Amino acid sequence: MAYIQFLGAAGTVTGSKHLINTSFESDGKKGIQVLIDCGLFQGQKEWRERNWQNLPIPAAEIDAVILTHAHLDHCGWIPRLVKQGFRGPIYATAPTIDLCDIILPDSGHLQEEDAAYYNKIKKSKHSPALPLYTLEEAQDCMQYFQVVRVGEMKQLSAELSFRFVRAAHILGSCMVEVSMNTDGQSRRLLFTGDVGRVHDHVVAPGKVVHSGPAEGEVADLLVMESTYGNREHPRNDPRPELSAVIRHTVERGGSVIVPAFAVERTQKFVFILKELMESKQIPRIPVFCDSPMAIKAVEIFMKYESEYSDEARSLIGKYGSPLEWPGFTFASTAEESKKINEVHFPAVIISSSGMGTGGRILHHLAQRLPDPKNTILFIGFQAAGTRGYTIKSGGKEVKIFGDLVPIRAQIAAFEQFSDHADPSELLTWLRTFPKKPANTYLVHGETTASSQLRDTMTKELGWKVEVAEWMEKVTVN
Ligand SMILES: [Zn+2]
Image (cartoon, rainbow, N blue to C red; front, side):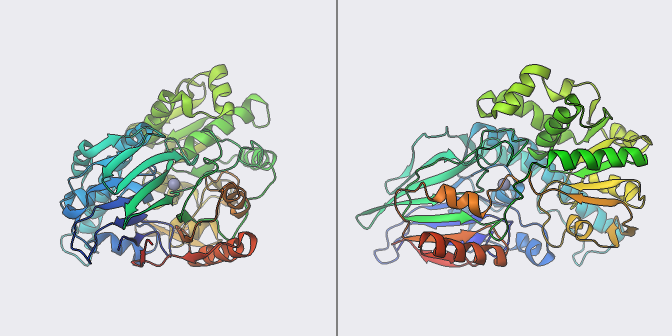
């Protein structure tokens, strides 16, 4: 019997990895094994340690990977898979491949830095501490990527084909529609990856790529994300309050520190800042994007005009590339980054990682957290166990580079910038399905979020919905 096994993002929001296996044990015929996404576990140690475990089947026996989008929790385990012997194609859209080409080597670099740090302080249980994969190994795995256009049908074997449909989550993001023909039956499986927001600039402001996932999908079996399964995004426009937070920080003589993913979220925030400055809602203070990856992400973004939202198209039409905007500095080198530490006038500093798990943001947090004049501004999800979570949830101190740093800065958080649909938006989208899927499995959510979304979907739609468990196998029948 064909089955799906949830190898990650089940019971948590990271490590997305779903195995489709069409092998027929009964007649001994060899089928095909495909991984939908191959993400890194992040956040709590209990999950991160699973990055070191082998998959239940040898990596070399996996025939292909189909990648929904370039976030690390969906693609970050690919170099490890290749390191373990995977040599098949990795199918993705062109923007996703371009983004992986910057995100994966950066991840390898961070892995190496972490290992070097633990070796230096001799705090690792393992001696010597090793990186999960290196920068070079991450670069090496790019040779296996193959472009698949949105809507193009790709036949992988006699029994399995797939196509990408728009997910409207980040640049290049797609859902995967799988057609499976086994046992004389044909079935449609839909893997959502991460589902984007609705078509509404006030509800989802700063959207830089087009909004709204593909509608009218047909699925016999649906595997859907549930990151925001138990909470609605605020419906109010965040821009007035955001402007007030920035103005007040400037009046105190402080700076605004924004931990943000270098890809998409940083661009989105930079676009909002530009809009607020041009409409005179905030003063023209210097904006520093301290991330070499953010520069490359902007360059990639500028390549794919067809993906822009109307708002992004109009801003670019008026002001050109963010890399050229006066007052906006994109720091590439370590030297340029260090110079930002010497800035003692009010500024906005945007840096990654978005949850404070690593990267240059740590230097900015270590320097600016103890000063109550500053504001730490969260515009993204903070997974339990991350430094971002500790700071956002009112912690008094946080450990950075081995030291406990007091948290005295003001804390502000906005949920409106999410790139994930909330329960109302998911229901609106699911109601466009012409028929009920026979089975729906919820993944990519903390257990409480997934369970609540299951209950909501059962009640509101009358669908059969289950919360997927880590390593659980479900048969496709
Ligand atoms: Zn994502």
